[in-house]
Amino acid sequence: MNVASVAPALLASAVGIGIGYALHLAMNKKNGMTVDSKIQQKLASAKEKIQNLKEESEKELDERKKQIIELEKRISDRETKLDTKLEDVEKKEQILEQLKLQLSSEKQQYETLRDDEQKRLVEISGLTTQQAETRVLEHAENRTKEEIVRRVRKLEQEGEYQLEEKAHDILSLVIQRYASSHVAENSTSYVDVPDASMIGRIIGKEGRNIQQLERVTGCEIVIDETPNSIMISGFSPVRRQVAKRAIEALIKDGRVHPGRIEEVVEEAKKKINDDIRESGEAALFDLGILDFPPQLVHLVGRMKYRTSYRQNILKHSWEAARIAIMLAEELGADVEIAKKATLLHDIGKAIDHEVEGNHVEIGEKIMRKFNISEAIIKAAAAHHEDYPFDTREAIIVQVADAISAARPGARKENVEEYVKRMENLEQIATSYEGVNKAYAIYAGREVRVFVEPKKIDDLAAIKLAQDIAKQIEQELTYPGDVKVNVIREIRADALAR
Image (tube, rainbow, N blue to C red; front, side, top):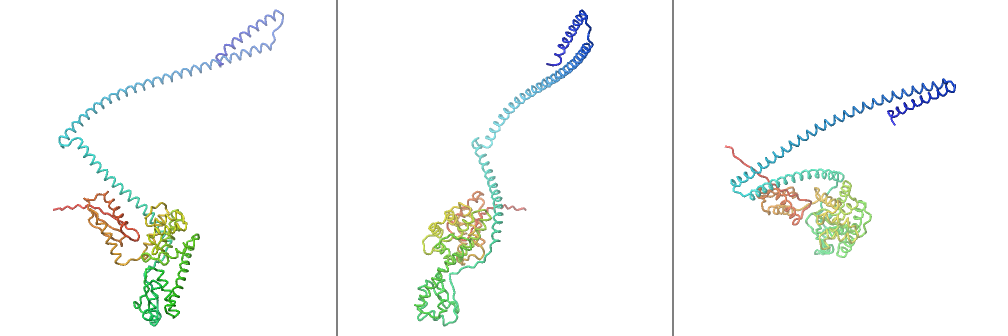
């Protein structure tokens, strides 16, 4: 309950109290009694409180009136503003309606003009609407095609640049961390002879000793090529090493006859087997591989007496494995898989002279025979891209193999093979229609193909490079990689007179 409603009640109470008091006084007088002074004081105090309450209620009423007046004013202002906004909205709606009508009229005019323009274009060009649309679409398609080619080139250049930079950094770091000398293997071996009389004893009466040597070793023994030297020739490094050790033992012993020759050759074969086992164990121990079975260790050692492009296979596989370890560490790949797969990637070459098939297939069979894990087999088999690169380790094996094989001095070819390979590269490139000329450069590492720009467009040039590269992969044998670079250029000439 507020003060305004309480004040009348208090006033009525005070009036009642006064009347009661007067009646009481009258009765007291009637009864002859006197008024007590304390009662008079209380009455005066009550009157004073009533007066104060009245004043406070009046002030409260004045404040309320002011608030109500202010509120009414604010409501009035808002109503005025709303009326103004409504008027503005109505005006804008009218303007929009006018604009819609104007736009509709202009649209009709535009459609009329467009129809007239199309009719005029048809009359001028002599083309139907369908034919004109076809030509426009062809033009747009050609422009889009050119734009796609530009964007593809830009993305390829940017991606190749970034990837090349990263690859160069990683490969440079790996090559810096690893350095090794390369000595090319030959298909011949030489034994120094202290004097000419020993050469005669090696030949024997009517050549029976040298014939016995050739028969039991399977190698060709050549004398008189170099003074005080005997040349041993044969495709098998193991046989050449057996023959070399046997001849060295015969020279040292001095006894040279067919029976002794057989004994010495058998002893040399045993020593070679021991050397093969020790070589395999040494290579595995150096790489930290301790879980290969003895038969597989022996096959690893046999790679010491096998060459490819006059490169020792065991040295190449060991070196490639070391490179693979560093690449796997840099790229976050599985070091064990990369290391073992790289070491075993050419294991088929240890017996490819004795078993039919290419060395990849033979190597896969060998690894499965000794229960090598599938991840290692797949990574090793993919090093010549005969199988897909399913894992990072497979790519690392291929890269490590290429680095070891392509380093200067690692491999050698004779002149005839080199010239023939270069001619084959150029012949494959020039066999395609639209090719003007082709040059094999950088020792066959790159083929530059110049095409006729009127016959070969940009997209066709990309496809041509891929087709040439694919045919080279299918038909030629070569170390490392061959880059096919198709060049399409337009030259414009003008004569100022």
